[in-house]
Length: 152
Image (cartoon, rainbow, N blue to C red; front, top):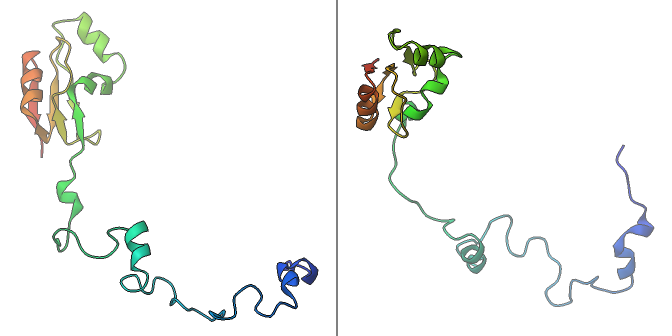
């Protein structure tokens, strides 16, 4: 069910009677005079490639055989977000009762591997479990009376 345009609407009707139909007598309308596709990028189409696609040809950097991206996968979280990841009401309870047990937060269960030290913590002890800690994060957590626990 392809829609076929009637011949009278084709723009080619205007060129009837004109020998070369707008393609010139000398150059002639031949199949693929410049080559098909990206042919000639380093030869007769070099100016176009250099102008509009710089860096298209060649290589950059070193090859890494069998790259395993999981080895360098290490999502991070800052300490200023730790309390917001606690269940609702834990912060208010700990703030009201100073003798309460310090809450434990395991950031690996929340999808983070490393705890970084941006921001500040309220003066309430907190126990944080993670695979890695930055020096700043460790210092700030311990300054509130909390503890850091390394997990595998």
